[in-house]
Structures are given as structure tokens and as C-alpha cells.
Image: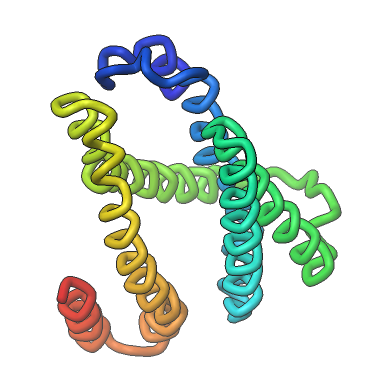
Length: 212
């Protein structure tokens, strides 16, 4: 879908012609959005092993280095294309570090499993993947399309003015997400050893705090 949209950017954006290499920049952002999924299973394996500090440290180092590189190259070359390449490299570095660390922590990942899954296992995985896909898709539609609407209605310049404010809002959202993610393992343990009523109460408590 992302590649298809690259041929029709004029339908979702105004003033497309004022930005040079707009398609290349769009594809770089598209690759940057897709790339983390190739390392997601390794990241979640580390998280579920109660080693969240490794993921946070990796993300922090990659983000800081990426921001510094983008600021330096943007200052020197004043090119948003180079800015986008630096962003992609930061995401790639984070993924490579996740790959290397997970291989050291869990050597069994290096071996290929030849044993086939049972039908019940495949059915359960398919069911969970469908649910996760729908949740991710609707989340993207709700939370990440505001810039598209602003660009289409008011133009890219207005969207650029709005971008810094969105960045600040997203920073607070990230903090909130870190809080929610840090207690996810606790919910898993509560689901395993606690009652449904207690689990439901804790869920609504956290949901209330998150929304506040």
C-alpha cells in the first residue's frame, strides 16, 4: 500500500511540487516505518524476558546518535533528503544492535527449527496476528493521519508549522507509552496467577491513569 501511495502523493498532499525528491523522501520514511518489524520478534523476546533496560538503552543510544547526526548534517548540507537518510540509518543501527544482543542472550535463535507447527498452533497464531494487525491498522489511522489531513486541506507549509507542536505531544505520548509498557509483564503475571475480577480492576485503573 505504501508503494502504491508513492505514485499518488498529489491526491493526499498539496503543494507536492515545492519539495524536491519528495518520492525518495517518502520511500525513505516508508522503509523507516517497515524496518523495525524485521527485528520486532527479537525485541519482544528481550522484553518478555524482563530485560527491558536493554531495549530502552538501545533505543536511547540510537535515538540520540540519530538526532545528533540529523542536526549536524542538516546544519551543514541543509538537505531534508540527507536528514531522512540519517533517520533511516539510526533505525537500522537500533535493529542491528537488537539482532546482535538477542543472538548473544539467546543462542537458540541462531538455529533453524525444522519441526512443523500443528494445526491448532497455526490457528492460534493466525488469530492473534489478525487481531494485532487490525489493532495496529486502526491505531495508525486514528493517531498518525492528522498531518496528512492538514497538508491536504491547508498545504505542506501549514503542516510544517504544526510539526513541532506534534513533536512535543508525541514526546508526552512516548512517556505514557513507556509507563504502560513497563507494567505489561506485571499484567501477564496477574493474568496467570490472579483472578479475572482483579485483573479487570487493574486494567481500568491503568486505563484511567493513561487517559489522564
